[in-house]
Image 1: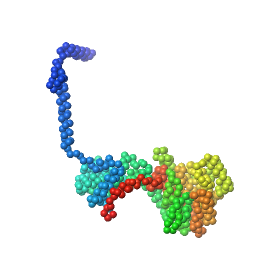
Image 2: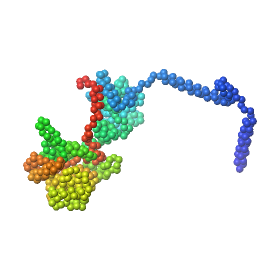
Image 3: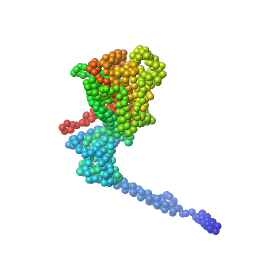
Length: 616
């Protein structure tokens, strides 16, 4: 309490002193105002004068500094804008013209912008594998390595230090180019002034790491091997997205998007796996004609071409089946072919006019054997290439939820006719699928189901195929076989041993799409001729996908085709699933596209600027 009283007394004294001072100031006379020479026309107190004088001095000092800085900048030489900086403001056409002129100028000066050879001592993947773990930060090894690749990024730190991202085979290595390490300072300056993003270069130097720990090659020599005449798109790390550009200019797509390369590596691995599976079982890989006098082996509309010397109309093959079976007749009991087929049909998400299949034929096998082999090939491939039987597939596009597909064998089996009867709660006529009664029944069924999108002609085979597509295939997200097709749908398959009017045939469906087609082969030449006659009848009624009679094939059957199983796989669709794409154009390097004429003007402009090299 005593302390509190002391503090209270102190506060009262301080307040009294403050009040006394204010009263004294109020009683004091006003300060004298007068005019000072520095501020004519203004009457100021002495304190105001001092403040204004101080402010004026500060402003004068500031102005003097600004003037001195301006004078120094005016006396300094103007920094010359580099050619590369100037090119940043050009549009793509101007950029290309500028680069062509640079190449021409180099040729005219006796240079060689397109050298014949550059020795590469290792690939980027080997460089990374060898030096990733043995180099230390800030260290350069006393070894010489030569690499080559495409420059995808260029960063300069002054005139004597330039960083490049060197890319090849989907990998990237940093190149740290220092003037002090160059074999020639003049060559260093000239070369790095010419390099642009997109150029293919060769570099020779020492492996090591920067002080910040980045694995790099420190070159003593940098050589431009191929200049890129076009401005690469600036994608800010998102890659090239425009689909039209990607499909038409797959080379640019591969340059800009590493994942595209991964897709076609997957495709190659799928073909390699199928080939190894068959080679390990003593199959012989063969090649059969791409052009045929008769479009046989499948029900599809062919492309027509003409041989001038023979004055003969020919058809691009729609399937290699008939030739392969003729080889089995000749004693080659296990044959296969991986190759292109051509069908003059529509283009959509899963169809392209030319596509790749694998077909094999094995003597003394039937469709039951082939179903087991199919389960082995497909499930084994998925497990080896993806690490699991279960995959996530974006069937509706990358932005939608994925579908889970389980390839664990055995696969589900659905007998076609009984499956349709169960799904639709119907009963097919006893007269058989070749009868008028069955055709009328199917037309009524389609009408009752309100199916109106089936194109003419409404043959029995087409109507059955439509019902299967709408009501059976839709059940098969996980792999499943639709088996035992009617004979009217399968002109090359052998009749079923226990189901009259049916054949020993199956199709494998995954995610509701056909992947494989196989059957016990028809080897009775009389029956085969009758089946061909039925197909010819369908063609005459307007079905341009029906087959014609191939007399040479029937003749080969007359020499004797052993009991044989035949199998076909669509490589493109399988690649779509395992590479996780929902359109076939993503798994074809050069898909069919409508004509594009926008590139003609660019080509004409380049012709005007072109100059031949010595010896060209």
